[in-house]
Image 1: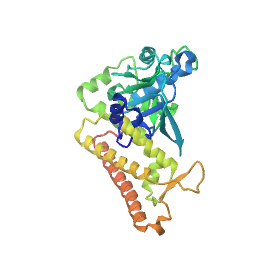
Image 2: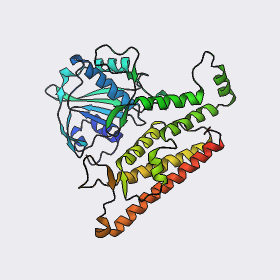
Image 3: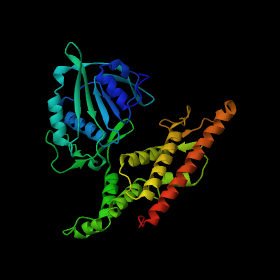
Image 4: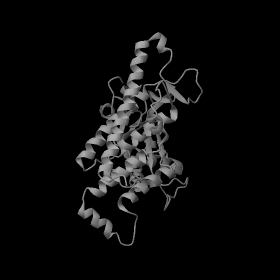
Length: 345
């Protein structure tokens, strides 16, 4: 287990049949573990769950693994693989799984692999490997869940990963993303020749404007968490909703891995993503108060460190403040670059 640190390590362990190597791993943004198979003949819910889980991993920049045949234990809201629990081969029809995925996930997931790993006595583990998909193919959509065997003929849903969970885009989130696209290329009309003409005259203008709009959707100027960072408040205690907002903003930026065509914008955007990643890492290192409310409303640098380990407290506070300041500086540079290109209007 200690040697498995990324998705490729887990793929190698599965390929070698070394299932015990996964014990102790935590579910995460690229791995979801199931103790039992999707029982497609037992109701619509199982069908909807399968396509939702596959599409969510297709909507990440890393791809992901759905692994069926392991038990997990939960501690501090974290699911950790605790035991190999093979499932009967008779309950898993990979051809039926693949057919359903192909029918209900759009666009079709490329290079999808369903691999049965045999153990003994007609039991084994199923690995569903969803490789990283081309950015231009995302988002992957599925029929909106109805709870009925017949799939929705008109409703659509977009499942995504949020940490170790799979969720759907909310209505407001879907609207923001659609709005960003319409702002970039114009709303549909009977005659789209004007938009096509603009694209022909300036190949970089439309995609770079679309990229800029997606960034502003992910991090609007009036976002409460941005106002908190800009307030330069001490970082010894941060509300949970701020850390969650930073996590979501980073996820949105990593999800959208299409680069700016303009070199200046590309460089500024790269530095900005790096600074946001560092801020996210520093916030992840904060602690939930042991005697605080449940669920927690904030995370903190343990105040007792000021007494028991003052140097650690000082270094941690400096790292948090430095990450915040670097992020704000990188964001300012990116916004100014966008403004110089006329992409904030």
